[in-house]
Structure formats: C-alpha cells, structure tokens
Length: 53
Image (cartoon, rainbow, N blue to C red):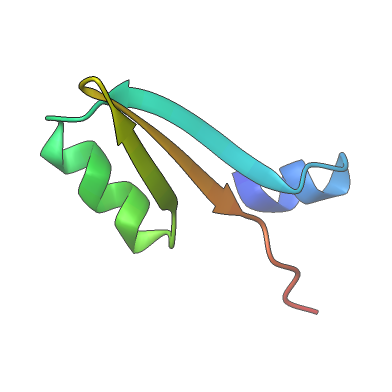
C-alpha cells in the first residue's frame, strides 16, 4: 500500500494541490482526513500519515 511504503521511507504526510471546484477530489481527500485551504480557486490539502502500530 502507498501509505505503508511512504512511512517506510520517512514520509509523514501527503500533500495535494488541485482546482477547488473538483468535487470528486475534495471528497476523496475528505475521506482520508485531509486538512484543506482554498485560495483563488486552488485548493491545497494535507493528509497526515498516522502510525497504526
């Protein structure tokens, strides 16, 4: 899984930038627990990679 591989290589989060009007992308990121901010029609999202050990 991508998350497991990212953690193994020291990543602590995923970051995405996308057009704010793209509802499917926003829904996907919301489902992953992303924090989002929107400026001038562009959205930035961050999903923290929490350890589940």
